[in-house]
Image (cartoon, rainbow, N blue to C red; front, top):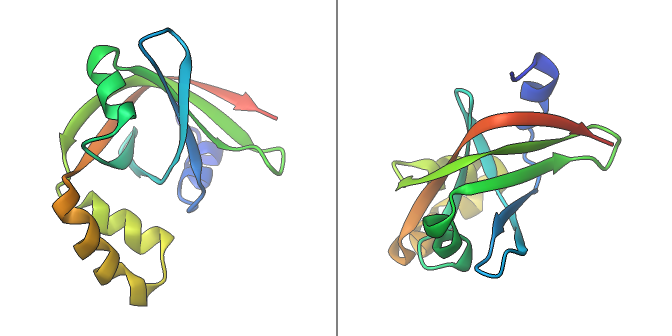
Amino acid sequence: MLTEEVRALLKKPLIARMSVIDPDGYPHTVPVWFGLDGNDLVIISVRDTRKVDYLQVNPKGAVVIGGDDGTGYLFKGVFTIEPDNGWTRRLTELYEAPDKVDALVEEWLPLGMIVLRMKIARVLKVA
C-alpha cells in the first residue's frame, strides 16, 4: 500500500494535518508531527486534548501530508492510543534543532505524552 514514493515523502519532517470526528459529526483538524513505524503512521500528543477525547469515541480519522508542491497524500485509517515508548524524543529529533531536543522532551514528558498510531486503510494522492 505504501509505495516508495509515499515512503520517501513520509521520511520528510513535514507538518501533517490530522482530522478526527467531533461529537457533532464535524471534522476536528489539527497540525501534527508524524513518523512512520513499519506501515503505520505515529503521531505524538499530550493525553489531555480534544483529538484524543474524540478518538476514544470514534477511532477513525485521516491525515494529509504534503500537497504544497503537487505531491501529497491523504491517509485514512483507524487510530489506537499507546504509551509514548520513545516516540516523543524520536520525533522531536526529527523536527527540531539538536540543541533544543532535550529541553523540549523534558518539558513535554510530564504532560502525559502518548502515541496515536494509525493503521492505514487507504492512501489517496492529492494535488
